[in-house]
Length: 291
Image: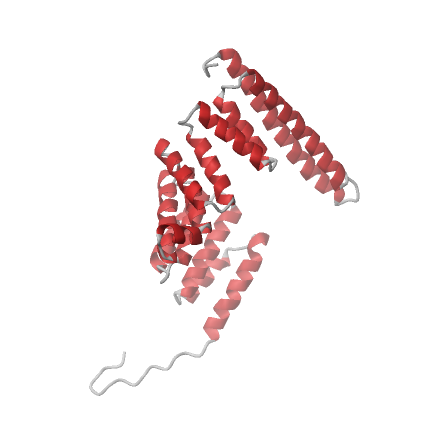
């Protein structure tokens, strides 16, 4: 049935609303139960898990009923696959995404999702094929490049064996993919931070380029935790390049509890460098001027 069918669209929107409401309710149960358990109340883990399973089973049945009525609606197979992936039914998710592609071979998101499954299985050849198809179909979606970059970085040994590259060449390829993702979505903190992180893998470490990348990341940070993590990385790079006072300055504003251990560890390393014996300046050759 065509996607433009108003009745189908309305029913599909209701299905999505039911899925979203169930997800929100589950998150509420988890947070409330954690709060209650802290006071000696709340459900046991077993009882909470049962509530969650029952809620998800209702949503699963709703998807199955919808697909039974509209078996050729590719979008429903796509979202049902995502639901199954969230509940860790990988085989079920794969079957739904493959069905979506049978119906609509130009569904780029389905290729991207299947590539993720092949990445988890360590099958870089298939992952690469599917990420490439997703990008060819929708080259403006930064998430496809980002996910391909993750796959390349994590499965770098497979990439080396498959394409005859050394590790540094694979890191460069991942860096290019992350760079494309950030170029397409320059306000995405995850894209910016993963791009900046990858510079640490390069030998030698390109300090100025990495500093520029972390400066960009800091500029688009939306939360205190994001800002402070970027500041810690800037401090780390300044320390590694011998700019210890600047490194301390970056750490001065780090106060978030989640970042304090990282700050403490980095400060200890800065102190070690500050207290390290200074290398003696070798005598100047005859006629040479000491500066």
